[in-house]
Image 1 (tube, rainbow, N blue to C red):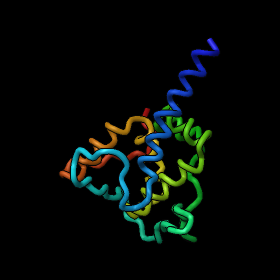
Image 2 (cartoon, helix red, strand yellow):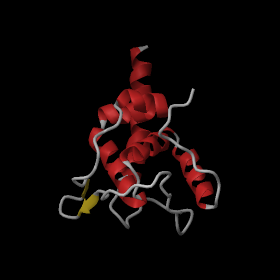
Image 3 (spheres, rainbow, N blue to C red):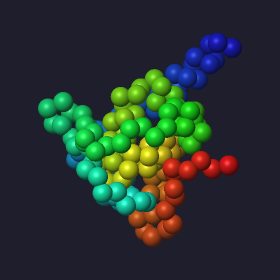
Length: 150
């Protein structure tokens, strides 16, 4: 039983690591082959007037601005919103999770809670999240990933 659990967690982390690396790459760089020439840029659900995080080319990391708010919820919130994958990523790879959140905040100029909700959904099922974002870019209703759904 322990062996199966270890293999299962290793498989999740392997998939999650590839997803983290794909989303946290430097601006303008895209890993792997691209099916479409241009990805639609997601739009923020709520207006956000604060300064977004910035990319530091010297450290190759996204850095939060002085106006970036604290984390609105912890790993348990990620578990409830997105399932076990985002919660495990948050606990075992917190730097990569934060980098993904900062990058999303910078790209869309959204709040931290909105970025965290989107990243929880992305790490839970990247294909469905990307499909939803492409539909939103075409005019479909925007999904609020910040709220807990019963």
